[in-house]
Length: 484
Image (tube, rainbow, N blue to C red; front, side):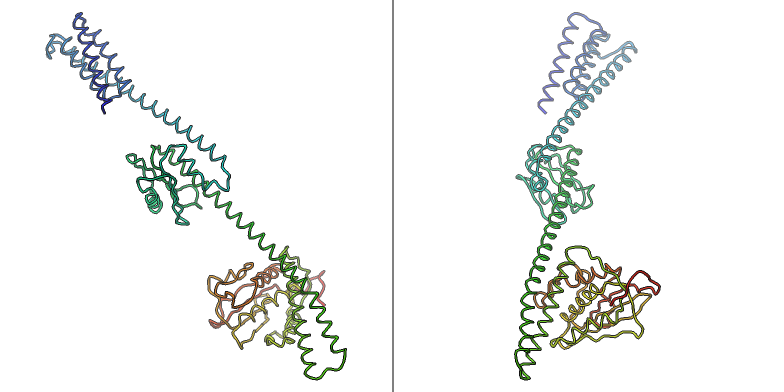
């Protein structure tokens, strides 16, 4: 303000000097008016429109009083002199206005050039950052390059606020509020600028700046850059998690494969030793029962180990079934026969139609899928309850249902139970398992062009039913052999 007052005072002094000189040498209206006009133009170039307007009014007053007849009075005898004076005053004001506007545009251009240089410098520093660590360091780049006292970012997905620098205006809370309200804020008085993230639908939040004036274009550009960096960081994080999950699953499969191979040798030796006991000499009735029990359990462990090996192989690559005509009745009969020799579990109750139900399938793979489903049903059955299996034709497809009674599956887990290694938190350590059974079963069924789903239309809340659906084999299919 004092600076503007000094400039106006300087202009008034210049008008006084022109008045004194021209009045002393008796110059007429024309040369004196031209000198006043020069003073006003210089004033406009150096001080702006307001100061030039004040000086032009002073010059017009002096011109009318000292150099318009009659001199030393504000009376005008010639109407043309009034027109000339008004024209002079308007010309002076227009020139000063144009000059002031040109100055403002020059200053704006200078600001834009400076902002572009700063944005360019910030871009160079951001490009030099490691993409994996850029999210934690880009706020510091903004603060340093633009001379800010504080920069804050709010991530709406996590609800976290991160601030770099010291804020005197509670920048963190204001940034959070701006994000929740979805409104940008410009407070030039306290130099606080808030921008919501736009242009990246996967990133929600806001960024705040404090401590230095920023134009709307710069604040918007910085918010867009921040959103892009956050989005890129999330992509890197998702890729890293996916890579880690892939490595973990590969390690689990390798361990599973190694353990299965290690079990095979001792099991074979134990089975041979059990057979040798019967051949070594006569055993009494009790000893014979124990030997048969040992042999049955070793056979069961051998089957489990074979399934572990096959599961590990399925987990490593895509399944390519060897398709043959397969009768589901005979296939289920073989699968259930293994459970009938089990002295611990009751064999499943199987309901099959009178006519054959043939599908095109890999018999070994489909058997593995059914065994996984039946074992899963046994594991989660209530004590004393059994497992029921039914086969029927429905809408031109072969449908196998495996049903058991037990705790209902929560709605949020009904699709996730088919994911690799997933186990419901409600199960905990109460039920042993690896979380691979249903995943392997669905993968096998999908390789046959079928579906495996959890049947939500169960007859009661404590009944769980899995529905396996395969296409029926066409009667005239050629070029495909029959199983067995």
